[in-house]
Length: 270
Image (cartoon, rainbow, N blue to C red; front, top):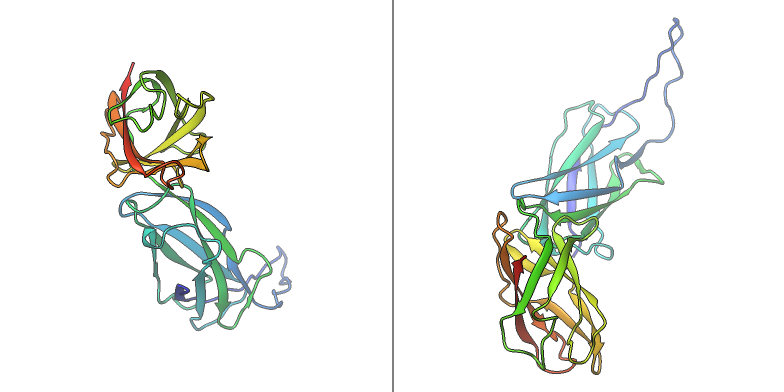
């Protein structure tokens, strides 16, 4: 079902004056409407809001309604990760309107996108530009410690046909470029069978440690590449202490080689 937001929007006129006594021509083209921006990043914090602006090109003494829809085909944000609270009235002769998008920080998955379309404005035509906005949503909970550097990783759950990652090795954990909440390191997967290092990426998501995006794909296979996805009960972390933490994940999530199992690794800073 399309999610529709109705807003009331008054319009404005562009009037330009010269420095002499003659008044410049008044804008007399067709009325057009558009968003004030087409791409944005929304760092979602508890209780925060992201404001989306709309303008039109002619004036009206009366308020006007407009319609905004969620583009279900392009939106990747989870339905429970956002809501929209619209203003219902704008003072007469105001030339701009805005509405708020509210992110639910505990449900937001970093990098997912909310796409909104401006589909109608009463008494105005949609512009041939800037009628779609893509909002990239990222959870933003304060992370005081770095959670980067050299870590000893140890598998503390029973092996699944041998160690899943490079158990007992020291790895270098770094921040993912462009994403302050994600951490990554290189490690072999199922080292008894595949020794080529592969990036393993996890996310510090407001108190929980999750697999980034849809999970990490293993570079070792048996009937299909294995996937490491979120554990049924993700581990937690202290945002102020990165000396030791644990990462749990679902091992072989899609049963490529066997039944899915939960694997946990302990990270101890060196």
